[in-house]
Image 1 (tube, helix red, strand yellow):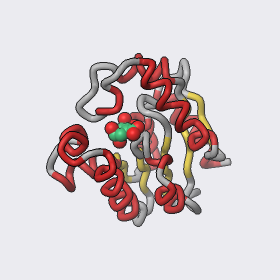
Image 2 (cartoon, helix red, strand yellow):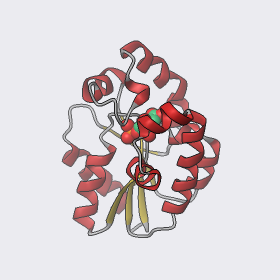
Image 3 (cartoon, rainbow, N blue to C red):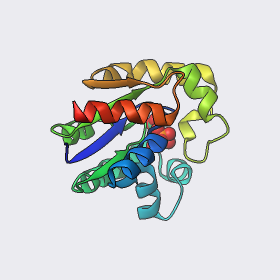
Image 4 (cartoon, rainbow, N blue to C red):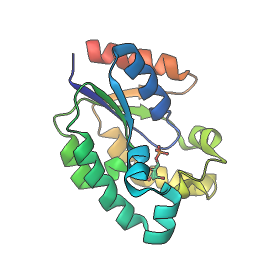
Length: 166
Ligand code: S3P
């Protein structure tokens, strides 16, 4: 069994719900990178984006990702932009990473109205589609992939667990 599990994927892929389920099942700790950032900063992701800008957020995200990766027996739900940064891709090398796939239309349906954590999702479906296409190569580059379409978080989690066992 791997030492830890890192879940990547676009917003709305269900990373946090899947992480929670797997962590319970394995009796591992479950961490959510966005929540760790919010906790460290004492403010919401939206506020960080608004007051400091995205670049500042990305620097924080890398710093907290690095610290978080020190944990063992952890399921980590990353933020949807983590793979866009080469520093983060380097940090994730050697870790057991599974990318949860979601297409932009499904992501839009799942996340609309949840803009406090997702300032980048405030726009419409079209913007979400172009954000997705700009990032697709990074999501596609993860060796282990699980498609989430038409599946419950539990079903996705079971597929991830079988990848971990296989
Ligand atoms: C982001 C995704 C969000 C959060 C921030 C930026 C992105 O995480 O990190 O709003 O760039 O895709 P989720 O994927 O958990 O929504």
